[in-house]
Image (cartoon, rainbow, N blue to C red; front, side):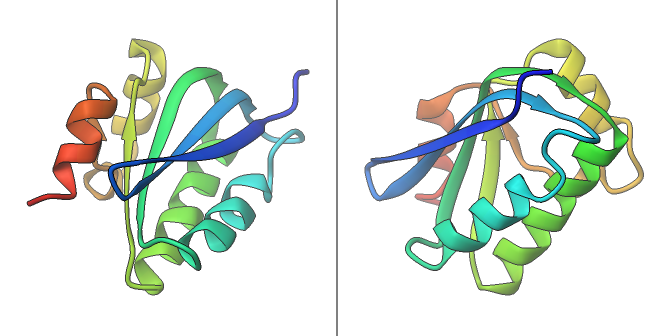
Length: 115
């Protein structure tokens, strides 16, 4: 299995978190929460680019939820964008799906912080 790779960059004051690989049990159990904890300490506006994510499971969704709680607990906000349909279906079919803010693309994600 390909491990999760995370890199970050800035776009109009928002930290874009580019993700590639798998968010599944046995591969990325603490990577997402740890990365978001480090990033939110520098910038409260995070947008996760899922263009490179091709699989997620229940453990991965749990890691996203844990990361989201960390960010919000630090006074930050995170949005997700570029989810393929399979990933979008997985994320929106969980009891806490209302917590995930999903945008179509990077421009929409960055604009969501202006509101």
